Image (cartoon, rainbow over all chains, first blue to last red):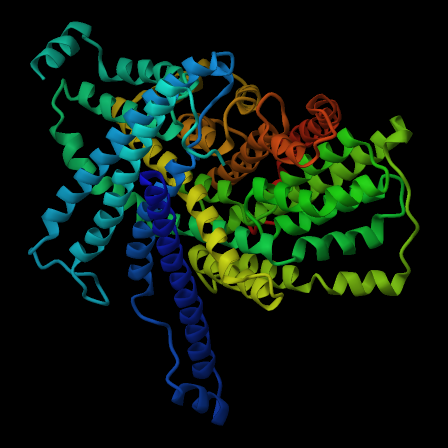
Length: 185
Length: 451
């Protein structure tokens, strides 16, 4: 029950981050098409150039800062699924000879440490957001408060922390019971 | 905290010594199966605290913004975009179009279907910046064909595992993006420089195949030639690959757009091809997004850990000290370079390429840039980047932990791993010959670049 809930949460979080990434990709592409058309319109003499310019196409201002904020959010949102499916890069050769039970305890140990670090990162990020709360600092073009960008990332980092706590619990349970709980791949 | 401070005082290490001690400890943690990003993060954190005599305040303050600024770094946003592009490329149906075209031209030769697999991998590498994705996708397409025409198990799997490395050798390439950012080089120039060595890799593999089938004539079957009109038709089907590659790499190079914008266009273009081909249903899109998410998070956790650790290393002054030391000894530059490349070859057997680059380039790069190769600093940086890219990729096809070998071998249950190992050594040999060539003649890598 808890397992499927966390699995759903991790996957949903990854999909939302992925959709944000997808939107940024489309936005960037449209912005470049607009920019190139506007350049071409300026370069062209006569009615064709006039027509392009009269369409009012141009680059989408603020794409740059939306990309930065959006990708940061997406990456935080990608963490849960990475941890849930055990995708963090490790070097396995030197511990390959361990008995399964010993290996399970080793994995559980690192999973607990990893969880502590992820929660720590989330808390630091929250502190970082506090700095921008109410200081009126905004981004250059779109003029949205910088703390908004931090806030969405904090939201995603919270989901990452919750998943991490569950994964740590699951790995310890795996070591205690000798049964696999978390999926591989 | 007081206890920690006393402990640090009792140790009495200078910052430089801390820097040097941190590296073997870090390796120890990694070999004890700590997630690599986690190990680097921990060592960076502890290193900072130790270097500040037990005062955690500076690093705690730094960490308030460190994660956000790393994850929102505009140059790094190119990575998730290229990864999603790779996912779309897998779904685009281009792998079978490329294979069909390559098979049309090469298939009837001795070992021709294997050569065609390599050719198709090279084409796929032009729209996919990841070796694992290239190996997996081309494996699904080409492995059944190879087996159908009577190619032996180990030879087939080894060919595809080696071909998969073309995914990253031929631009766009995620590893080159990371290298460019660490060493502050121009991504477009690195992509351009990677092009000829990438083509050379494909040619080297084709030569390897033709040698292999002469040594082991039983390893390959034959198939009839395809009529010419059909060959041209199959080739024409691959036009989206050429168009996307030219637009992305050409556009970045021509300065029409930034590398990130180029990656966005590439992802949009490949996504469009997948959509038009009817392969991109909502369900499949969700899986593609989740696949992108797993790899992106894995990479960025390592990037974050590496950034913190390298920050500490820079604070300790160890990389600069090492560079000064090596330069002071007056070793021959080529000797130093060779030692570093051999180090990568050995290390690549146990560690993944990205972690290795993030871990070691900040240490080796100052050494290399201080040496005199008769090239400009930028040329040295680009040349070294391409060499490192190749040697770390060899790790993907060397036992015991060559990821490409595992991916392909898992697709072919009849072939034991040892068969794959035996055959893949020929391709490793071809890689090593290529590295020697590129070391001996830097011009091969550099001549496409404008002076």
